[in-house]
Image 1 (cartoon, one colour):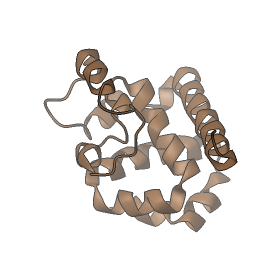
Image 2: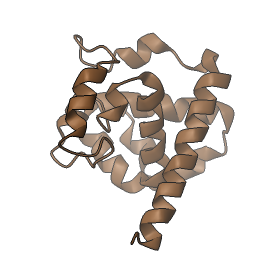
Image 3: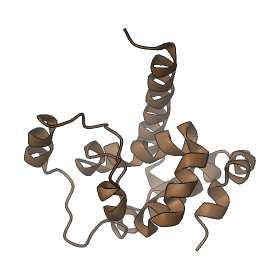
Length: 145
């Protein structure tokens, strides 16, 4: 049986992922693909579905990044490596679902910091009142250069 906490987190994550996808679709003018891609490894290309499918045998695609291998490359989950419209929502889920914990991760990983800054700037353009949330959670300080 799934715990109530797990179900609540799952619902919250899915809401943030859904909103992030709407933002990408409805406000394309805010998203600069080249800026986002600059935080990916130089030889990286989204969409290697074969590697992703093969990895499903070993673990869940949304499994926590316990050994930080994805963070070093600028990703939150392996699923995020399949497409920008998976990668961007991964960031939104962490920014809004685990802001304090994510601020600590942002401070350690420059590629994550860059992408988080992009996500936060897009959200601030659409909803400036989020600034207080970002400030109070430590995210604003974490994304500073």
